[in-house]
View 1: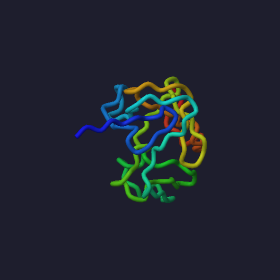
View 2: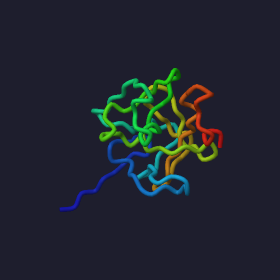
View 3: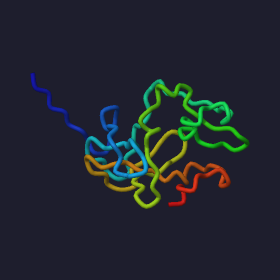
Amino acid sequence: MYYKVYYCINKTDHQSFILKPSTLDVVGVGVFAVHDIEVGTELELFGGDFEEEVREISDVPIELQGYCIDQGNGKGLCPKHFNMMPIRNYLNHSKAKANLKYNGGENYIANRFINKGEELFADYNELNEPEDTKESYYKT
């Protein structure tokens, strides 16, 4: 049986992204587009069951702290279940290569045309974390 799947390039869904080894040398995993994505497209990077909660950063294992968004005062917005993180949590940071724009809440928008097979990058500076807690690599 043969099924042909057509994707609009101005819409994404749960079949639009895949995790593969990143093109960056300093990280392991990256998020890649399975099809072309038009500029201005809102990306569906969350699963339906995803939940976040504010936690004391000191209560989160050091290996998982990078998946939390610093809220200041020792608190972070973290996945409720680290073993069920959506693909959005695997977006890598690059100020120079950012092809996504954070528009608040849970959404990212393509800020330029993204080609099939291209790695997605976000500028972590757009997450509005306190300046004194930002990692040094946010500035690159």
